[in-house]
Amino acid sequence: MRTQRMAVSVSALALLTLAACGTEPGSGSGDGGDAVQSDVPVTGVAWTVDSVTVGGKKTEAPEGSRMEIDPKGRATVSFGCNQISADATVKGDRVTLGKPVATQMACDEETGTVEQAALRAMDGDLTAKLSGEKLTLTTEGGDTLALSEEKPADLVGTRWAVKSLLSGESTVSVPAGLPPERTPHLTFREDGTVEGNSGCSSLQAKAAVKGDTITFGPVAGTRKMCPKAEMDTERAVLAALDGTVTYTVKGQTLTLTGSGDQGITAQAADLEAQPKTPRQHG
Image 1: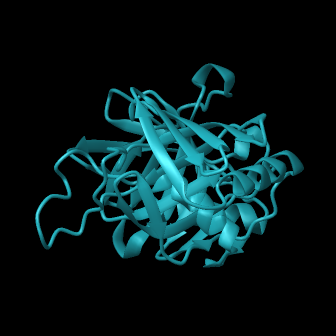
Image 2: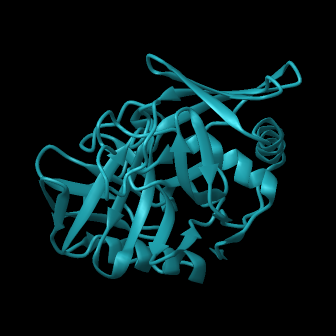
């Protein structure tokens, strides 16, 4: 279902503070730079949210809980369901956020419960402490959010499960509950091809990787007919595999962006745990 970005509560504003903890050393020095400045170098790093501790009670974060802040000061947070974002500025190890916006999707009860615990934990100013690959954010009351740096997954050989369809500033989530054979996914191969499923039909195409771009050749597929929602997903996925697109891999997240800011985001999945997609010929 299409989601609109809209303002969230003050508590969500506090949650986003976890994503706004700084830049790489030296990236924000000098006048006129637009990068965030901080004593805690975490900008451009993908972080996994490990746990939230509120009132002495520790709660493990659900699979897919992640946060990031880009070098220009845009913070994004997701607990595996909604995405929340805000402008972020920092001073030392303290963080100040602008007005946040968020997608509005219904989440499962477990995810919603942990999100609410995190909102309570992040209510107020936070102090960031970085120790190796671990980042701890602590409220004035002593509640904490624990994070770990995500190592980037390999583009080639990883099964990428498509999660979101991008169109400018809007985001459409891939329909939940699709059968495995119609769940959109991509796997890039060493031979310069990509194969997978577009949401209805299987697909295969040439995929030439150069720098931060991928040039896709014409897509071959089984051309099945599916329900409208799946066909809409297929059209959006195929549009993201049209010609030359830019790509990024941050942690376990792949983003493909083509002309007109059309694209997809995908999460790394376990190849051994997923059904294989037969190669298409001709």
